[in-house]
Amino acid sequence: MKLSVRALAISLSLLWGLAFLFVAFANYIWPSYGRAFLDLVSSIYPGYKPVGTLGSVIVGTLYALLDGVVTGAILAWLYNSFSD
Image 1 (cartoon, one colour):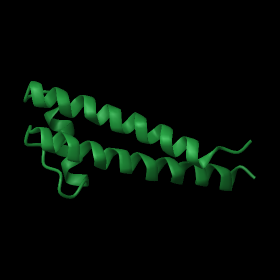
Image 2 (cartoon, rainbow, N blue to C red):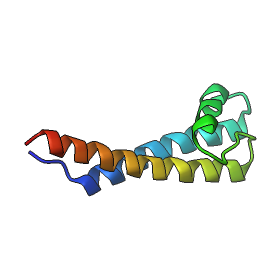
Image 3 (tube, one colour):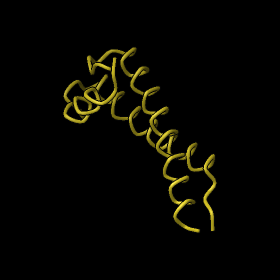
């Protein structure tokens, strides 16, 4: 059985993007919430700073969506390559 690269890429993108959006927005409302997680993510995503503004929430979410698409596509491609 082969995985759909497109379906896994979109699914993982939405999952990671929404998870990040939830944590970042909660941090926007309660500044101490998820601070260690956002500091970790800021070390991975260039240009993202967890400063607690609405702009940083949007930038981080866009990075997370892109990261999810790439990771999902790579995972599906690897699975399909090794499942033959």
